[in-house]
Length: 116
Image 1 (cartoon, rainbow, N blue to C red):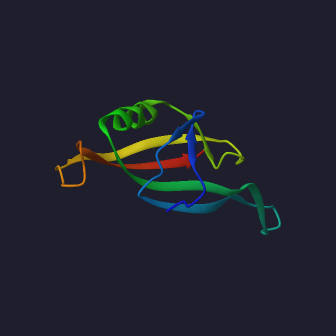
Image 2 (image 1 turned 135 degrees about the horizontal axis):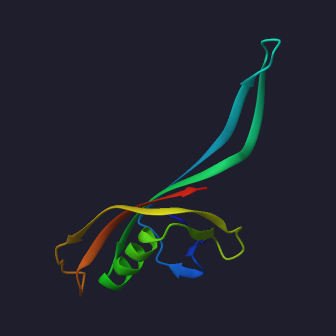
């Protein structure tokens, strides 16, 4: 769980995900010189990839699906975090049955965000 951190997509605070994984990757470009040595150019350090699972109402499911159809979104973790541009994609969504606790159906939505 995120604790005190929150996720903003295009400036809108979205519900905290039920599960959340963040990965950082270094993007490198390796070229070989005429002398045969490798030259490494690091184009970006710590490119972010997020995997999230949300349990939300139909209203939030629809909003998340809209973000998933956009070519690029702005995502920020925490109110004072740095905004990142990237692709927000929905990999699956399905309806959970009613439970004694829920007053309305709950959708489980699996999403990914890849920084560009």
